[in-house]
Image (tube, rainbow, N blue to C red; front, side):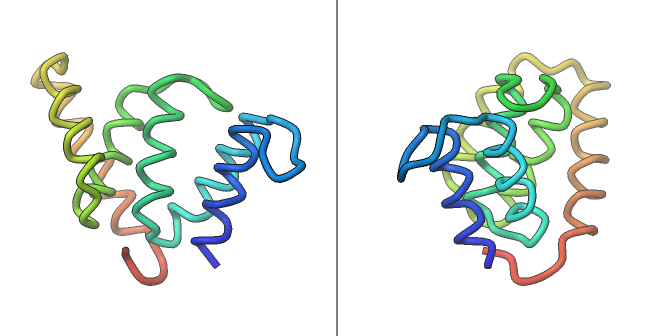
Length: 112
């Protein structure tokens, strides 16, 4: 269940519900849910990648996940992506769009 997996990511990220704070586990759960098309998890994974929380910082991968979440109707992802685009070079934007398409094509399950 991608919604439950995303919730586990939130709990690990914040050390909630009796779980120790573990940013790597949080990123793992967000990725599992994101890969199944859950927009909230796609957004959170994009944020974690931008900050380097639980996995290496990767601005292209971050923006690609934010783009996928935007395509899946996540308004905050669209806002954050718009803000981050101001810092992109044209070549970076092309790489983001290419990677976002690859991620979107690889998602299994319903998109929310």
